[in-house]
Amino acid sequence: MKREKKTHMQGRLIVFTDLDGTLLDYSTYSYEHSEEGMGLLRERDIPLIFCTSKSYAEVVYFREKTGNTSPFIVENGGAIYIPGGQAALFRRAGRPGQFRNSGGYAVIQLGADYARLRQVFEQIKREFHERVIGFGDMDVRKVASYLNLPPGLAGMAKERRYDEPFILEDPSLLDGIKQFAERRGLRVYPGTRFYHLMGDTDKGIAVKVLVSAYREMYGGLTSAAVGEGKNDEPMFRQVDVPYLVQRPDGKYVDIRMDNIVKIDKVGPEGFTSAVKRLLSTEGLYNGI
Ligand SMILES: [Mg+2]
Image 1 (spheres, helix red, strand yellow):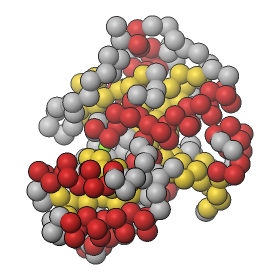
Image 2 (image 1 turned 60 degrees about the vertical axis):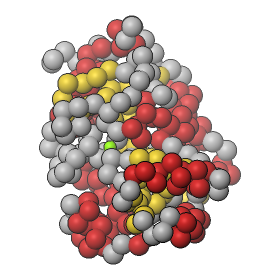
Image 3 (image 1 turned 30 degrees about the vertical axis):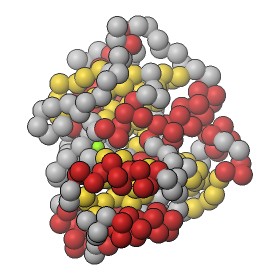
């Protein structure tokens, strides 16, 4: 039975969303088709929390472009950023000692420091005969060409703090690299375009912190998430209503969860459909 068929509206709504391939078009990074969904949430004062493998600098850029003011999760759960004005949420998201202030945000770091990741990545390169290439090994021009981004945005993408994206020429090496990383307390995870080396965290760990902070603050809560990739699965597992949108080829990534709601549209159009469906289910929208 699909969770969304039940009347589970309890208190307020919050929505998490992946960026690449979900809120943003997989190849052009356009959010033209997700704008309607974002507007519907904004009008209802429903937080939309970006939860992405993108870097802090990129997320700040897209938050400003889209007028988003909610907290956000960067680099696959590497850290949570809570805007300075949202003090009540800070207090509930953890012990004050966990916070660090940076650029007007309270930061809860969950992942490993980038310097540590690069240290292990250098070992992986030696161990696997230089058949992996990390962001730290590429210049901005190369990152721009891999990501199909203008140099300004590629520079932002390269500013990693908690996660090293990398290219693997031979996928058969993946299991060996995973084990090598795990023995050093790190994880390897496939993202939308790259593999990622990161600390012992994921999107779900960060989502869980925010869901419980909002739940305490609001007294009751329904949480939803929209995504399209394998690295969205941990996020989906922490929310009440997970929405899976299609990849650019119209297919779904293989995620087996009883309550997953499949949206029959690709990326940003799927995002807007998911928002409409959520709001209708909750009795907050009747435009479908
Ligand atoms: Mg994605």
